Image (cartoon, rainbow, N blue to C red; front, side, top):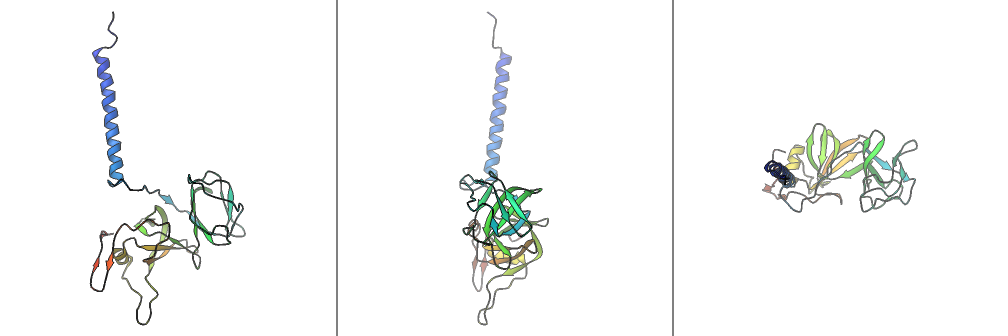
Length: 233
């Protein structure tokens, strides 16, 4: 009887099995590195924000985002008398505005591909045509990457707000955004100006409900300031 399985056959099978084991090890190691070694880490999805506008109404009053993070049905968000933004069923998105349905109560934040909506979020509208967003993580190349992965343009100089101040207790002042960031870590809110179409200010010690918990702990008193944040950021 002819020998069906030769030594060369078993060697080839062993090589394939070894290559599979090597690739599995590499990808498993990469996942551990990317998650910073923590089992509770949540992956951040990055979205380049191309549009931030106030929403005055919706063509679908029952519009919802399902538990799977996808739009349940089609709708058009009315931005003004001449513009609207169409979202089709199945588009990834987030419903972060509890007052959706009330005139002008929400703003839409969207990642676009041409005129098509790739991803969107509905968030509460702020005062004076502003939208409050999570803290800034990094500033690079004209884009601010927020701690929740949103990427938006920012002004050359960010207005740094920390209390209104009174005659007996003046508002805190900071020489620069870097100084502000060093003190507060990511325990602050970014403020997007719709008319200016970019982040224009930061406000300390307040966070939007959908912002991740601060990654650093900062202690401030009259004599000392301690933080775990990289001072070079």
